[in-house]
Structures are given as C-alpha cells and as structure tokens.
Image (tube, rainbow, N blue to C red; front, side):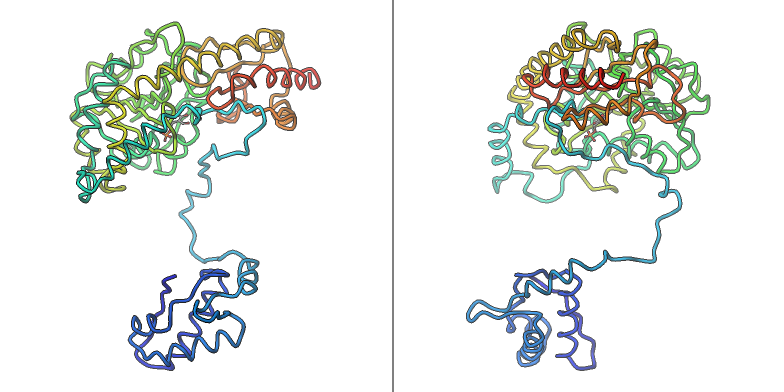
Length: 478
Ligand SMILES: Cc1ncc(COP(=O)(O)O)c(C=O)c1O
C-alpha cells in the first residue's frame, strides 16, 4: 500500500516515520497482513536516506507492530489490527446543519425474506447479461470514444437519440435528443430539477403516501414539503397548496398505492399548474411494464405549455445498480439542468451509457422488456389469484395495471393491526410492506391501511406458498 507520510523541515525523521506508521496501524488505516512499502521506495519518495527509514521499520518490528518475512517484505501484524478495529469509531466535533437531524432518506436495504414481496426491485435473473457484457467490452476498446476523457454532461448523444426514440414509441413521450438529459438514476434527476427550480423556503407538493427519498431530498434542500392526499383517481388536485412551485407525482402507477391517474385528473393537474404557474415533475419509474388495460398518455404528452418535466429510469427495466435515469425537459430549462448536472458529477458513467445505447439500438432492450413483462404478468396474476383465494374477507385489491407492485387495502369493516401483521409475516419468512411506512401524518384515510406487495424479485413458484403463509398470519392475528 501507498502510505501518506508528511515530514517537516526539522526534527527526527526516523521518529516521525515511526510515529505516523504506528498511528496508521493503530487506527486501522493499515490493516493486518498489508505490506509496508519497501524501505528503498519509501526513502526515495520522502527524500531521506534508506537508513533513516530502516531504523523506523526496525522499531516497528521490535514493538510488534509489524512482522518481517525474508525476501517478502514487512507486513502489518494481525494482532495490532484487532486492537485497532475494536477501538471506538472515529468521533468528531463537526456537526451537520440542524436540518439534517430530521432528514430520513428512507427505504434502506433489508435482509431478503424467504418469500419476499419486495418492492422497487426487478428480477436480476432476467437481466440480459451476455449482451450487456459484450456491449461493455466494445465500449472499453481503446479506440472507443468513451475512452477519450470526459463526456458531455447531458449524456452520450447516441444514447439520447436512442432514449428519445424508445420513449416516443413505448410511452408516447414527446422528445428529441436535445430534450433528454442523462442522470445517475431518477434520484439524481429529482435533485438536479430541485436545484434548478426550488429555492429554500419554497413550497413543494409530493404525494402522501409517497416515495420517501423524494420527500427527504426536497426537505434537505430547504423546501417546505407538503404531502397531498391520493384517491382512486390520482393525486387530489383540489388539495394542492396554491403556492407550490413544484408538484411531484407518479400518475401512471402511484407509489405506493398503485393508482393510475385518470385522464380527467391528468388534465385537471395540467390546468392547475397553468393557473398557478407551477411545474410538474412526472416520475414514470416503472410503467414500461403494463398489463391489459393499456396506458394513458403521460402528462408530458398532454402538456401544452412546457410545464412538465418527465423523469424515467432503467432501474426497473434493467438494474438499479446501473444508476441510469433521465429527464425530458422543456427547452427553457435544459441549459440550467445540464449545468447543474455538470456541477454535480460532470456526467454519468459513459461506459454504461454506451453499452445501454447499443442495447436499445439493436433491439435487445425492447425484447428484454417484452420478455420481463410476460414474467411479471404471470407473477401479478398469481398474486391476484392468491389474494382472491385467501384474503377476500380482509383485503380489497386496487386494480393496478402497471409496474412491479400492487396495493391491497384492509377492508373498511375489518380491524387488523397492519404493522403487527407485517412483523409476524416477517417472522414467518414473508416480506411485505405496510403502506403507512410511506405516509406522513396521522393515519386517517383508508389508503393508509394496507399492504404493498412487489413482484419484481419473488419467483413465480414462491408466490402461492408465500401468500398461504401470510394468510395463516392473518388468521392468527385477526
Ligand atoms: C417512485 C420511484 N421513483 C423512482 C425510483 C427509481 O429510482 P432510481 O432511478 O434512482 O433507482 C423508484 C425506485 O424504487 C421509485 O420507487
């Protein structure tokens, strides 16, 4: 390992080298088994004689910080590391701004359950791995453009062209390549949009229940975030705060209640934004997958005045790990959004962007989405059948037509302790979520009593047994 050592102009150099290396070992920066640099190299890099470094090394050895193996070099002793790692974590006197005390980013990772109806994750087993490997290898060839330094903050042109064409066909989004800005997942799209449009103290409306990381993000930027109720037609426009600068919404598959906003509600939302000089952030995170009923035009297509920012992601269609999302922005906002992207992280990984452009261009992506859609349709059908078979007296299933999860509300005439069911289900190896975890404020409305069931990661064959075990928990606790 390369160790940072700073030598002042005066003082005992052997002592100084000894002290800095022993400190690195004690506080765990150098771990058991790691090699110290050869004395000759360290001496050369510090501009001191080799004898000076050797004397420090001899002392470390004598005191048991290191062990030496002839011909192989000097290693950190294992025993010293265990002392280091058992020490308390590094403290510090610097505190974050007070606002961060109350920021809860939400939705951490969890240990997978045996029957895991996890939400927000696709099936990694469906990922077109062979094609992806091939595409990444091609991008990494030394004559490839992505190897030649930094890229365009807006994203690789060939990927923007591919995405514009793809979403034009699959989602009827109006976009040319210059309207598309690549981001590191949808989450960064929300961040960049908020930086460009929202000042501290501004009012921002989000859905309640809704997607916690979005709410927390806006709060972290100093916005006054107002949660707005969702009914069976979508976000309740009549309850939007009149001064909202920005309205975040998931009209095609509400997160987490799975509601698809009606056409009337969509048009009402757009008129509201016009009348209040507000902007709509349309998060279309998972509706590439849809079942039966067809899909309604996104707000972005219905918009006549350039007030809608459309955000998409490849986290559900491919993998969340790729961190690729995008914004389709009105021309009036694109330059500022690209500037904000440049200041945030310069650009999203161009190797991944290039590989994705190839995947879309040669038709593999569309084929993959069609295939995955068939798999998810079968899982969704299995869940709906199981819910109808075993839960009819307890749950009303929302008729969702898209995405990777569905929502089942506890029937109004049933008293069921949702959190207790969720916890007992977890103990029985069944992972489900309570919708209340995505809501802020008192639990008053029906939409806040119920369960969210994802089918991105649970195998089709596990669904019936998972639901059966869940029914046993219901019977026990009701
Ligand atoms: C409502 C919603 N929006 C967006 C995302 C995707 O986020 P990202 O693209 O940052 O992975 C998710 C993922 O769970 C989500 O549930």
